[in-house]
Amino acid sequence: MAGPWTFALCGLLAATLVRATLSPAAVLSLSPEVIEGKLTQKLEDHDAVDILWRLPLLSTMREKPAGGNPILGSLVTFLMKYIIWLKVTSANILQLQIQPSADGQELVVKVPLDMVAGFNTPLVKSIVEMHMETEAQAIIRVETSERGGTLVLRNCSNSPGSLRLSLLRRFSFLVNSLADKVMSFLLPTLPTLVKSQLCPVIEAAFEDMREDLLRLVRVPVSLSSGHLQFDLLSPAIKHDVIQLHLQAKLSDSQGKVTKWFNESAVSLTMPTLEGEPFSLTIRQDVVNAAVAALVPPEELMVLLDYVLPELALRLKSSMKVISETAADQLGPTQIVKIVTQETPELLLDQGRAKVVQLIVLEVFATSEVRRPFFTLGIEASSEAWFYTKGDRLMLNLNQISTDRIHLMNSGIGLFNPELLKDITAEMLTSAMLPNENGKLSSGISMSMVKALGFEAASCSLTNDALVVTPASS
Picture 1 (cartoon, rainbow, N blue to C red):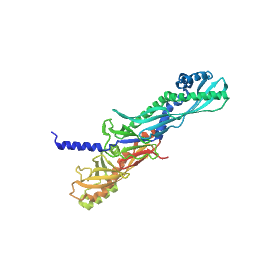
Picture 2: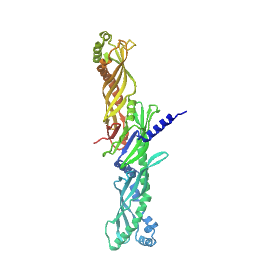
Picture 3: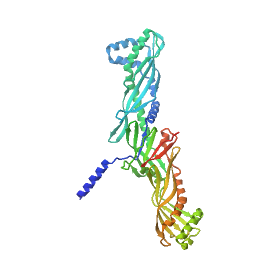
Picture 4: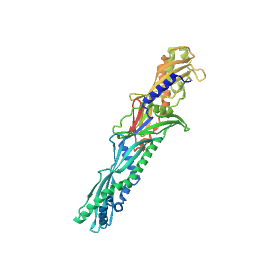
């Protein structure tokens, strides 16, 4: 039966979790420029300009003349007798604009439209052309449901006050008067057509863009022994930036999920874009797991005299300080066995990275003996350097140092293992470091970089994350 202390502890834990700011495994931040570019491309894919060319100006004016005013409607009907055809002769979608809303919680998408419409009349042989400028406007917002949050496009319509019409060329008084009347009748017609004809295309283009972004973040990152895969946890809008908060999972080579990275109390400091089109911020524990998957625990056997003869001589010299008798037992087939006990752990501090590992080092006097000469337990570390090569994220480990060393077992009597600290560090660096860097040499493919339209990326470190951004040209 649970006592009062149990309930008090549960209450304390619950209160702590409520106060905690949960951080996603990673965050993909997209600037307005990226959204503009992606949405512009999707509008092209949906033939949005072709929709403008085919706007049914004349039929719409006839169906709903002068906005439904019966008197003006009669005038429209009368004037239509003098118009043989009326259609768009030129159409362009100008550069999209994406701006934050007043409260910074939504994004306002503006789609400027530039068109020329012409009509033919028996009153004049030439086509009478009018310049038409207007703007479609919609809102990007985050909507939540039982299934989670998603980005949606809402309230697409003609932007108030954006409609401007002008006659490109003046004709006779009668034709000019007719053109003025036609333009006045187009004023209520164009917003209706923008909403009914263009807005569905804008909404469809946005849905395609949203699905592309979701597919983009779900592309698995290949590791030597499995995959790291992201998925959308929740979206957010921060002023003019869309942030896709991601969860992550680590799977082995058979596809079995070995670790989930959901929201956690582990901190994640979000850097500002500072003019960059995008940034991918990956939480430290996720990067750590990826590094561990690239460099799993293993065992190395080195014939020291054959592979590293200079170090073999130095080991024998160092052993003489401990025991000359013991040093004489080291034969030409001496073996150094290096066993990493656990996967390496990545530590970030002030923009620098360090990898720490627990290592067991055994020295066998000859290849024939089964019992180790001595066994050392080592807490080793090395500086880690992240860099990019094209769209691949690379990691290189430098000089291994023995931070702590202790004697686990000895067949030659007790001795101070600190006497072997320098030589063991050199053996680890010479034998183990090339092997680990070889496993890291393939890097991690950042397909997201090319999918967003960039050839290369750069990376930087914060105190709690790895940040990937486009490389400066």
